Amino acid sequence: MPSDVDLPILRLMTRADLPVADRLRAQAGWNQTAEDWERFLSGAPEGCFVMEAASRVVGTATTLCYGQDLAWIGMVLVDPDHRRRGLGKALLRHCLEQLQSRGVACIKLDATPMGRPLYAALGFQDEWPQTRWGTDGAPVVERTGEDGGDVRQLRHEDWPALLDLDRPAFGVDRAHVLQALVQHGSQVLVRVRQDGALCGYGMIRPGSRARYLGPLVASDQDTATALARSLMIRAKGEAIYWDIPDRNAETVQLARDWGLTAQRSLMRMHCGPNRHPGDPSWIHGIVAPETG
Image 1 (cartoon, rainbow, N blue to C red):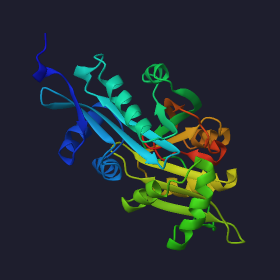
Image 2: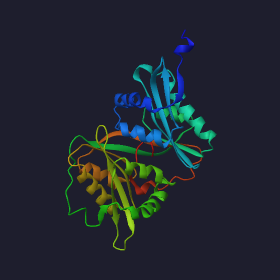
Image 3: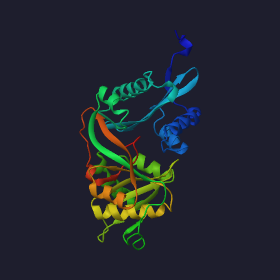
């Protein structure tokens, strides 16, 4: 029988845990970076947790609040040698309890096929499916002029219009998440109509395994295509990951046409009343599974 010393301990994550957390991420083959872990912890120091066994970190989970309306759970990882012992479920349940105690109305996550039954058992319901598309080498993207003429880099004065576009697409305000991505090295492009109205934006950033394209939010398919093309060109031949809602069939076909292949499926799920679902038809690339 294990002694009290051997029993797993669930506690807040600290900066000292980040190297071990990133090793768990690498074991799982995920694409986040050490800088991403820094961003998760600095963005929610009271909402990131580790599971410790025999004085060693063997599990992680992160949470992120979008005010009282919505929160996200991500980075639920368990060391392969400690799986099937209920540690992942304990981490997830703790995240749920913490968020519900703060009065958060709806909690979401993006579930892998392996995790989906666990989340369903804890009250999560399916919302919409998405697929990760990727390529090991350079996508086959034709350059059609310099960013299509009306695609350009983000300017400081674009932020209000960008957030006004993003809010109804995602469902709630996520300015803090988008601005943190820019501060941590994401390249941002916007598309502007002839009348000066911003009709879409997209980002691309480094990952541990591939460049990550997302978020990509656009009011129409032409804008999504123009932004995606310009972002792909900026990858400069590196591998790409791109998580696209399955409902956006034209964008999915675009990924196929450029040589990307389906890597894995994810299901967006929610627990609690989904009063702010957003409009996924405008989302042509998510921010990331761990933050929405």
